Image (cartoon, rainbow, N blue to C red; front, side, top):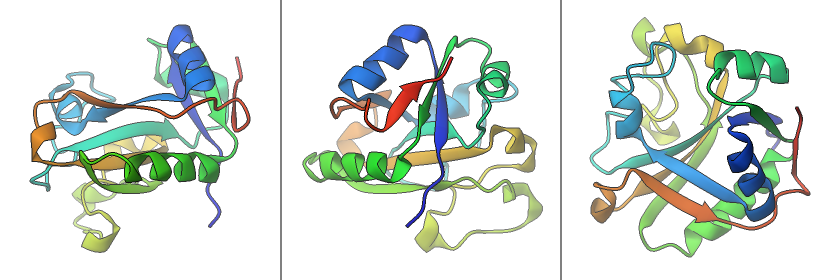
Length: 170
């Protein structure tokens, strides 16, 4: 499987925590449903699921300046040059976590409001957004929590040093 290089905007301290410790905050989709920011908040985010969906969002945008323009509240960009290895590391960590039911990865399509439904096998709703969000060029990693995770805002995975697969690019 070939996966794209991806970038993630962070505050500088979080970028270093990601690179040095592999600390990843998977955010409860409910947070995005409540976000009032017009470019990020999506009241339909992952709303097709009974279990909680936690997502770690990145972008396939390769220019750090474009990433920071979109995420103006961040000051650093981390580029993950080997996203397949990142996916493998997450998969291995998820397999050890009894609070996580499944793990999904993939690019987001921007066709939900165009009357196009994705095959449920591919994670209908998890990887589909309205066309107005297409500037995000999002690639996401999603984990499905068990029923006890409903009240959590984040699921935090601390996987280890990522400096062999990622770098700070600005």
